[in-house]
Image 1 (cartoon, helix red, strand yellow):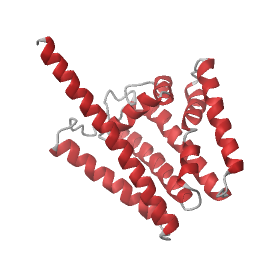
Image 2: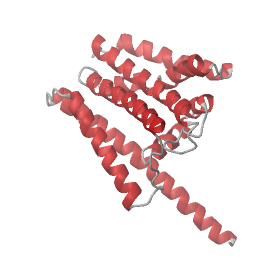
Image 3: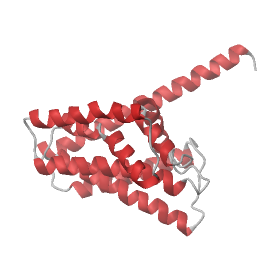
Image 4: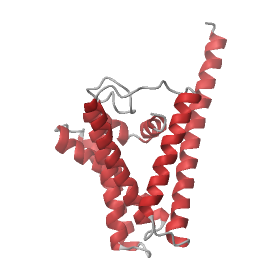
Length: 224
């Protein structure tokens, strides 16, 4: 392959990845704002049903992307233990989404996202207790300003609500717990059902502590 062809292929790949990232950000922001409107402004009182709609849409669009658009190869479940592992991750993930949706009924979107920024802190915490893997001290030091910022924001947030804050914090912790559990449960399966399945616990943590890598993981995971 000539250098011109390689350059063209690289540009197409870069454009494709950039498009996925933009799509991921725009869809997540849109869903977040829509959930806030339904739960807080419109008065919709069924956050669990809203989560079911969210999960059903994700499953349907993932199926279309895999079976019809062939974005990634179809990977059938090969064993009952593998099914149980995936089911466990699904329950934890759904719990995090339910908690996030409930919190949106009581908290502003901006504050919800500020609390969500502490996900790397909880990821590092769970990784230490579940895999006994320590990160470099610089990594932990970098998390201190994030946590301190949320603490300061909590005291100055005019729309602060204790129950909403607890639900948001629980959702954030559940999201981090799922990331670490994902790396532990699926790493032995030899498959790529998720972007972290080929990582061990500590590697999965590192990837979630780097914003660019986090975006790559979320984009890839949305199609698995």
